[in-house]
Image 1 (tube, rainbow, N blue to C red):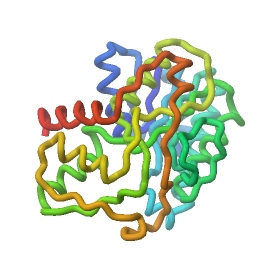
Image 2: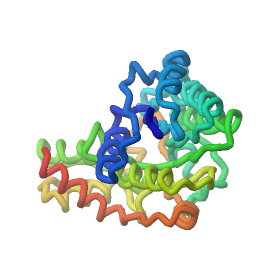
Image 3: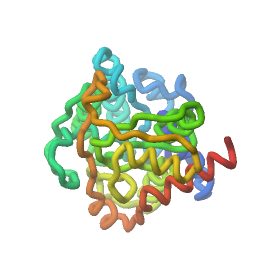
Length: 287
């Protein structure tokens, strides 16, 4: 039996949760593999809940290929909506609280002010739409949930912008980076820490919360920070979104207001560049 089950344990955030849980000496947490914890297999999920009798389920499993999703609506919807529906239904049966990780992509990103939890959700991509649908199915089953919307997630694990920039920075003389999309990077270690702090607090302040690191930046400035901190010598050139067309439209401004999560749980959120320094240092120690 384990107090906490993590779905999507092999993904970037799942691996960060494992690392932070060990650092916090949290031992009653299970990280089942994808076969055992297949969120599209209700029977397998039932067995898992029977086995662990959890008090919390953290769902990090998601379809996150933003451009590919434009051609794979049904698959994205299965994982991001139906999978969530399956977990939420069992959370109700077992009286477990669900921690669902969502995204800034549920917003259109067309208004230049920090987004609060009650701002209207207007997704402009299939990915954003299916993640929002996943949010909507949860209250149909249970009131015991924390939905944490995050943005621009990166870490030492998995594939992400930081690792891509470090790789390309070594291979090329110059890189063109989008400068007119603004948001906030989130170090997945910090998000994992926030999730486990909420669970360990035993709080019942259920609802929707925004979590990213502090500060505001563009993809260009984020990349420049990566190169500066890692001392990577590559020329970064700022370009407009229109110069780098993608299948899915991205929000132009998706800075999220974190006042609610800080006030409710007393969580201190690091500045994005300080967290980036920690990540790059960790990558340098374990390349």
